[in-house]
Amino acid sequence: MHVLQASIGRFRNLLNQRLDFSSRVTLITGDNGQGKTNVLEAIYLLAHARSFRGAKPLELIPWDFAPRPPSGEPECFVELLTESDDGTKQLRFELVGGRRQVSINGTRITKASDFFGQFRAVVFTPDDVRLVKGAPQFRRQFADRIVSLVDPVFVESSVAYERALRSRNVVLKRSRGAQLSRERQAELESLSTLLISHGRVVAERRRQLIADLQPIFQSYYDALVGNSAPRDREEQVRVTYRSDFLESGVGEQSVLQPDQALKTLYFNQLEDEMRRGLTLRGPHRDELLIDFNFLGSYRRGRASASQGQARSAVLALTLAAVDFVSERTGETPVLLLDDIESELDARRRQALFELIHRAKAQAIVTLTEVRPEFEETCQEAAIYRVVSGHISRVK
Image 1 (cartoon, rainbow, N blue to C red):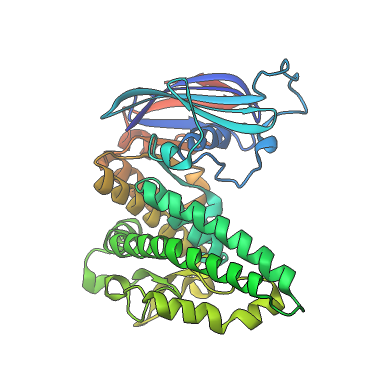
Image 2 (image 1 turned 45 degrees about the vertical axis):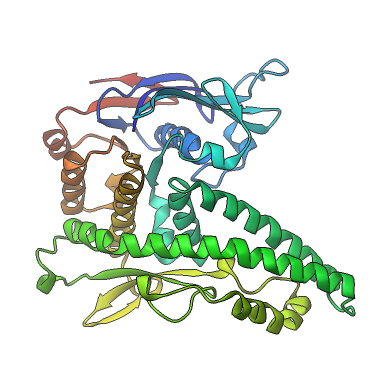
C-alpha cells in the first residue's frame, strides 16, 4: 500500500498544500510548530477517520486565520491518491457544517466497516509513550486501531458493543436508588446479552492480536536497544492481555468463558453497578499489560520503565503492528513516524532508520533536520520542508 499524492486544504495551518510521495521514504523537516505533524495527522485521518491527537472535528479547522468558505463548501479537506493491489483509489475526508464526511472514488461512505481497510496506516508519535506510562484506555485504543485495519467484523462488533454499553449505563443511572422493575430488569438482561455477544468478538480479536504481536514485538525491541542474542537480553519486554471475558491462561493459552459464566458475572455485580451507574465488567475495562524484565522478574512498565525503555517499547509495538497488518492482509500499511529525533538517542535513531531502510513499508517521517546518518541510510528519500504551514520540496 502506497500514498502517491496528498492534497490538504484548510487543515489546521495547512491552507492549500500538495505533496508527492513517489519515494518509499519521505522526510518532512521543519522547526517545531510549523505544521509537520499536521501532515501526518491529515494522512492518518483517511485510515482511521479520526485524529491520533484526539482532536474533535472542529479543532481541525483554522478558524482564526483562514476565511470562512461559502455555505455548503467544506471547512477543511484531505484527499489522498493511493495505490494498492486493488489499483489506485481517491480517498477524501472533509468537514461540512462541522460533520465528518468520507468518500472513496467519489462515493460517500457511511458504514464504518466499509471504510476501515480501504487505506491502512500505523503511526508513532511522542505522545504514544502513554501506551506504557498512561492509563489502560490508551493501550485498548492502540489494539482496537490495529485490529480495525484488518477485521471488518471486529469493527461492527466494537461499534455495537459501545452502543449497548452506553444504553446499559443509561439504564443503570436511571435505576440508581430505585426498585428495579420487571421491565427495566428485562432491558438490562437484553443489553447484557448484547455486551456478551459483541464483547466476545472484541476480547477474542484483541487476545489474538497480542498473541501474534509478542514475538515480533520482542524482535524489534532487541534491534532497537541492541540486544544481540536471547541470553544477552538485558531488556526483555512482553505484552499480555487481561480480560474478564477470558478464563485463566496467558496469550494463546487463554480461552473465552462460556456464556452462562459471563451472565452470572453481570448478574452478581448488578447491585454495585446500579449504585454507581456504570457497567463494571467487560472489554471496555480490559487491560493490555506491558512488562519489563528487571533482574529476572517482570514488572509493570507503567511504574518501572525508564522513558527510553518506554519509547523503544512503543516504537517496537508500532513496527510489530505493521508486520501484523501486512501478514493479515497481504499489503503493508504506511508507516507514519512523528518527531523521532526528540524521542530516541542517536544509537536507537540509527537502528530505526536501518529497520526502515530494510522494511517494505512506505515511511513518512517528521524531524527537525536531516542528520548525516539519516541521509546515508535513506539516500533515496524525498525531503520536504515546512515553514508556517507552507510545504516545499528540497530533494
